[in-house]
Length: 169
Image (cartoon, rainbow, N blue to C red; front, side):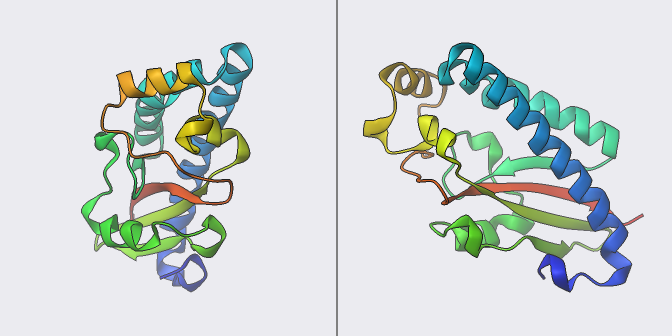
């Protein structure tokens, strides 16, 4: 179901999940922007690689949820979609982010939520067409992510999703 179709009984869990996703998004973007301004995109790669899992863990513990990032084209295999999200993630691949709605899934004792992530112009410094990515960034990506599939995106493309699983109670 889309966010607009959520029944009243699931609304509190969805609201808690959205708060956790918003915190993850805000903290990651703030840290990415900080390091890009400080030392460029090579430094920012470390945010996604090392700091994002730690931030997600803090949010998981604070909000009592499971949370992560995923995509139809992974950079890090550890970010594979949860089983309940896999088909939606794959079906959305290749679309513009504006054409993909937030999905809410009733998982029995939990609610799963997938919120699309759009490629912003700054994202193309690491996720854009390979020929447009700086050589130092390409080298660091190849070193850190030898099976990287997360390039060739343009602004407005769907990069992936933030997902969360929230207990109903």
